[in-house]
Structures are given as structure tokens and as C-alpha cells.
Image (cartoon, each protein chain N blue to C red):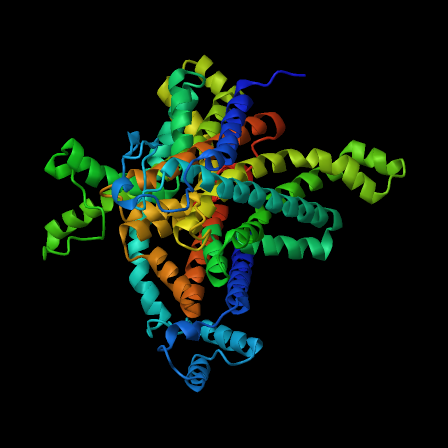
Length: 326
Length: 284
């Protein structure tokens, strides 16, 4: 219990440091966001008025104090570019990214662990080597390149190689703009649009997890307790499920926490290429427009996701690994 | 001399070929890979075609009729330099800070490590985006930003190694013999702590190349007319439906490079380090 409290406090401090660093980074950057916001040909006085209006004319410490004070009350400020509360901007985008991320994450782990364990069981064979080259190659591909390659396959390739109609998957957006379908058919439309983005994220994620879980499983398979279990006549299925997988949980949980930043980053490009209005697109737009409040809000969301994932892993480890119970 | 095993030799040969191509191909190519060719006759030629002027295009041409193979090799110069320098400099700073932090201990150690943890808690790509977008884009900005966001993992690794080595008998022996602390750190501790850092730096080259391509893809990295793999992929994005090779070909060169550096890192890990080196890379 005391352990949990300590983790919680240090996570909160870490979160605050992250936000402060981001705040300082935006303020330390050269340039002035109002030049991008103000109408062309506006006078210097108008620009100065705008700076004052946005609170950018105050000394750095005052700006920081104001921002921190508002944040304590749960107010993330107002977007410079969209003139809407940052919380609204983020609330629109988060469900899109979370949905995309959750489905990809589930697929990533199912596929990745399955491939890794299969390889570990057949270590040194041709299929193991082939899978190592395959996973390393996929893991080496930038997500936007893989996304474009999939789009090329399902547009250029579909036309050239004559794909059947059901296999012609949409490459852009979340829904068919021409359709006003509701209910189930709208859901089916969304699912069709989700295939390529999910495939991109899951392929790269699974490749990374497979590389890692192969090492974990190969390590466990060479342990004495596995040899003992085999010697006692345990079936291969029992060996893998009881002895290997149950011992693989602690590193896999740590891995789950480690995989989240990669997934968040990957979604920036995948949302960009497939035109999905999620956190990635919001971040890119905010960065391009020097929309400081949104940049800070988005970073806060990302950092919170990473810190919470680490915290959850720290708290979950003792549950699956009795050696870690103090 | 011990014979080079295949797991080290194959990636090294691949990387050497690529470096050679990056140096030779743009120099030897008859047309400037940055200048527009005969746009009408030469644009969007598919791979393995010969144009009306008798020029052969291994990877086809882009919308300005420029040869994609020559451009990919020209881009390799930038991408390789950024990848190697970005990872090496970040690694050097990480080693220095990690060793210093472990050696000094106390408040300095705690401050440095909480700074590292804080920076690690922001996905590296987001940190890169914020930095790269707010400062002037270009090759040196990309390298600076890669270094600023890349030292933490190596610092953590080296710090852990140094802390582990400090209580080893040979360090105590050196100190009992009257060696100065700086000599102990330099001669006895650091050489033993560098194994996992070397692996992390090698694997980091692939990560840095991926991140550079990501920034350049978004227009925040290397700026045209200077080609880099990332901005070439961005360039072909609009033509993905009619001429997919424009975007996909530079990516293949990138993938070969990153795969080679990953296999090299894996081979080094088998020799130098335990499983401590990071397995999941920052990526784009």
C-alpha cells in the first residue's frame, strides 16, 4: 500500500516536470505565434494587442504562474488557432485515437506473442530465421511508408491486379462521405475504413513484440523447470501455457507499458496519412500553427498515457510475480 | 585475426555497399539528380524503363522526370550522416552523463535522472515534433534535436552499469592501490560499462534514420531541393495512386539500412551485452 502511494506521488511529480519542460520549450522557441494568426497586413499595434489578449506579453514567470494556476483548476486554456477550449479540441480527438490504438494494441499483442513463441519453439530452423527477417523488416519500415504501401496496393494494385469489389478497401477518412447510413451499416463502413490504419499499426507493433517475446520465450525454454516439466511427461501445450507463458507475464506487462509510446507516435503518422481526426492530427496541426495551449494539452495527454501505463505496470507486477511482493 | 562471423559480416557489407552507392552514384550520374529533366517525356516512368533519350531508370522517375535511383543515393548521404551522427552524439552525451551521474551520486544523480525520466515520459516523436517545428528546419536542427531527445536511454544504461561495477573487486583493488578516482572511472569502470551502450548506439542509428525520415516526411526535417528519404516519400505521396514507385522506392533503401543496422546491433548484443539493451526502438 505504501509502495502504491509512493509510486503515485512520484508519477504526479514526473507529470508536472514533463509539463514544465514542454512549457519552457514552447516559450524558448524563436518566433511569435501571432504572426501566423493575425490577418496579413495588420499593423504592429494590432499584433501587440493580440499578443496581450493571448497573454503572451507577460514575463515568462507570470505566464507560467497563470498557466499553472488554471491547470490546477482543470482548465487547459483556449486554442489560439481554433478559438475553442483545448479540452473540447482534445475531447473530440481522444476517442478516435483510443479506438484505433486499442484495437491495434490487442492485435499487436496476440499476433506478436504468437509469432515470438512459435519462433522460440522452433529456434534455429528455417521458419524461425525467415520470421526473424520478416519481423525485422516490418519493424524497420516507417509507419507512413507502410501506410502508403498499403494504399498503393489497394488503389493502384487493386486496379492492376483486378481485386474483387469487397477487397477494394477505402484508403482515406473514417467514413464514406457520400453515404448517410446509420446503425449497423455505418458501423460496417467504419470497420472497412479502419482495416488499413489498424493493419499498419498492428503489423509494426506485432513485429516489435515478436522480436522481444522470442527472446523471452527462448530464455524460458532453456530453464531447468521447463526441462523438469518435460521430463515428467507434460504435454507441449501444458509446457507452453503453464510453464512458459505464466513466467513470461512480468516481462510482457513491462513491454505493454513500453509499447504505448510507440503506438501513440505511430498513430501520428497513420492518422496523418489516412486522414483520421485523432490526437495525432491535432498535434500536427497545433505544432504547425504554434498553437501553444493545444501543444501543451496534447503533450499532457501523451505524457499522462505513458506515465499511467508505467504506473499500472509497476502496480500490476506484484500481482503476477510473487517474488515482487514486499 | 578472428574470422568475422556471418551475422556481423552481412550487415556490414550491406552498409558498406550503401555508403559506396551514396558516394559514387550521384557523382557519376550524368544528370544532376536535383535538376529537372525533360519533364514531358520523362515524368513518372516506371522502374526498369529506358527513356526517349536512352537513359535507363532502375527505379523509375518522379514527377519532374528525375531519376529516383540517383536521388535515393543522394538522399542516402543526408540520411546516413544524420542517422550515424545523431545516434553517436546522443550516445556520447548519454555515456558522459550516465557515468558522471553514477560516479557523483547524491543530489546531482537524482536531478539528472529525474530529468532523464521526465524526458522519457514524453514519446520521443512528440518531443521531436515540438522542437523541430518551433526551430528552423534543416539537417543540423534534426541532428541537434535527435541528440537532445536521445541521450536518456543510454545515460540510464551506463549509470546502471557503473553502479554495478563500483563495488566489484577489481575496482576496490585499484582504489586500494591508490589510483585516483578519475583514473579508476576512466581505466577500470568505463571500458566495462560500454558494452550495452555500444549496442544501444548501433540500434539507435536505425531509430535516428526512422525519426529523421518521419520529420522530413512532415516537412519539418531536411528541406527540398536537398533530397532525404523522408521528403522523397512525402514527394511521392500525391502520386501514390498513379505512380507508387516514387514514394515506395526510397523507403526500400531506408528499410535495408535500418534492417542492416538492427542485425548489426543484434549481433553485437550477442557478444557484448546481456538483455539489458533496449529492445523497442523509438520510431516514426
